[in-house]
Length: 216
Image 1: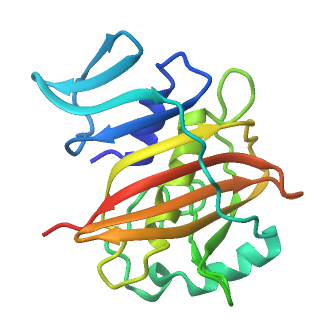
Image 2 (image 1 turned 45 degrees about the vertical axis):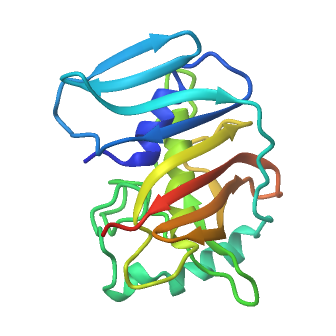
């Protein structure tokens, strides 16, 4: 299936809105399959054979980012990423999977000592859009997994169900950024988390909140 954060970012890119965007993933999105994109008012939907897979709508909501973690500290935290200890439930994940350098984002969020945060140093691969920046959908993808890994456990982060995000600044290839995640509660099989991308000097690049669901 396609990465949830990337799909959410692709859909969000089709909504003309200066506010936060909420994307709900109803079903897994298949790869190598022709899908249909629909527009109704300010919303956008993704369907396959008439079955709704995902939808994006603008929302007026103030998103609170987890606090900034300097890049060097975020990079050190990667050593504690459980996926590096052979406990990764989806080792091929585009964002946090153990893929070869240049193949995927390789964001490995590990615990930041003395806090409830997880963080990773994002060394951005050379993937650019027409304006020379990284496509915004990849920024959404970078925000994806850290909010799930903020909940530690052998079952992993689960599956992304809903993501609300706002991107303030562009990300550039070969740059170095801090990606931070924080848990925000749980309810049964649901896990809630927040995430953010920061520049080296602590400038906020993007922020998100997410709902994750543990499979039965």
